[in-house]
Image (tube, rainbow, N blue to C red; front, top):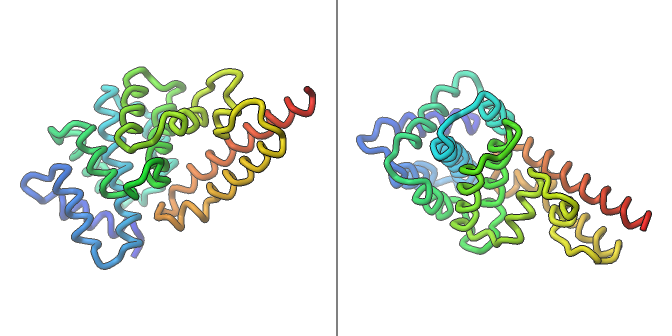
Length: 239
């Protein structure tokens, strides 16, 4: 049985609840998958992505077809399960709880409790991928994403590094992407680059609980890291 079969069963169960608010969703993930920690992490991540995508769409006021396609790039949902995913999306949009409440609960569900938690970074990265799908991150989306990062305890420098993978920040962009100060030696840059590539290898992401379908984010993340390194390398060699 795939994660989407299990997720579909879970969404059906939650949707039948009388209240079905964020507290119900979080508690249901903990209860339904209490016997399988690995599956619980994968379901929790998927639920967090779907629910916070819904809250971001509500904050922005519109869901574009580009954003729908970006979501589908992240999650290759089997046709038979698309209805269930839509049900969870709609449930999150209708919930009177604000996005900050959702973010706090999802951080408790998916996070490690430490600053710059990699799982929460993955969620934020996915939200950026969706937000930029129509060509730019709109102001309300930007405020939403920054506030999510604050709630997730992702520090400002780390947030800017994530953002720089999706938005051109100008001349300093490649250094921000790698999270390294301009002026460092080429050896230091290369060391940082190799660590980032290793940390963000698709197998690493899957091992920490991301669904196999989330491989798109791992691929685009490593591509951004490679491009930043190559830009810095060219600049240093021609200096």
